[in-house]
Length: 149
Image 1 (cartoon, rainbow, N blue to C red):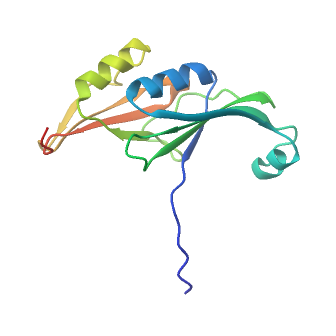
Image 2 (image 1 turned 90 degrees about the vertical axis):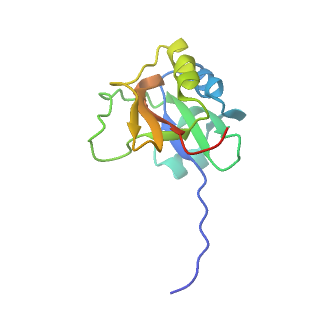
């Protein structure tokens, strides 16, 4: 077997309002690295859609290890789907560690985003919750209770 290095790049999420999604994730603490509009033959080939034209935004976690690429389709039209449920097969959620889950939830609430049920305590190791973010994205927030502040 050939040793092939692999590196995680990002998670891409289609949204219906890129400005609202960028505002939500930057308020949570991600940094906006850049925005662009992409189209052309290269985009059609890469994505597999004829006439592919989208607005994109790349965000990064403060530690530099996680990136999130958001895209809003201009063409072809985005196809609305029912919000993903936590037990459905496929792309499920995006998760973030936060210093203070209550602070993070207050920020999320300003964007109209609230926990699906509540905040759970996992064996006094994590406080965590799932919430419905912009465009119905499931976002997990977790506070490490063992980390010294």
